[in-house]
Amino acid sequence: MPKDIENRDDIVLLVDNFYANVMTSPTIGYFFSDVVRVDWSVHLPKMYAFWETMLFDKRTYTQAPYMPHYDVNEIQPLTEVEFNEWLTLFHESVDEYFVGKVAEKAKLKAISVAKVMMRKIHNLENFEFENFKNMK
Ligand code: HEM
Image (cartoon, rainbow, N blue to C red; front, top):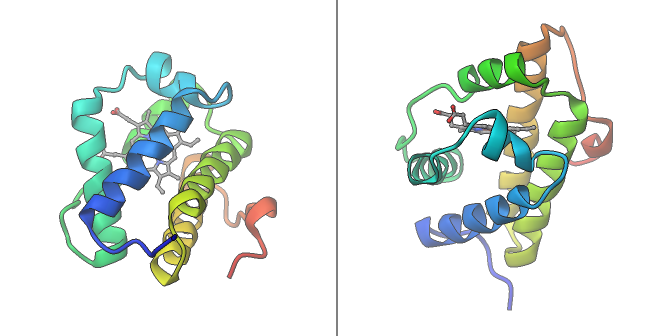
């Protein structure tokens, strides 16, 4: 019986499942294994904190998420194609395990953070993801 995202354990389940799928994605998996050799023992706790902060106002993540992506983009461009894949996989992981208000909030937050990343990285005044435009 699907339930909403309610606590840190739920976030751990969501984030772990999401990155397991990211790693097998031909479109973005190599960003984490080759472009940057991500140290998962550092990255995963950061992502748990990030989502805790986004969804539960917990303030456990106090960095700016944008900076590392400028550096990634310098090595290998982060375009709409890669962001679309990231968002699709994230939404799939949310929908696989959860249903409810917080689950919807997670999907919308992911879109809005990705949108700001695209704008900042590529210096765009405005940018919308065509594939996710109708999500309100
Ligand atoms: C194509 C899309 C994306 C790719 C390929 C990507 C890749 C990466 C990589 C490789 C890192 C690790 C950087 C490092 O350790 O030096 C990272 C960090 C991070 N990413 Fe992404 N990312 C993407 C989109 C997003 C989106 C949409 C979000 C949020 C909704 C996000 C949130 C974060 C956060 C919070 C960190 C940790 C930053 C820190 O060190 O404080 N990423 N990402």
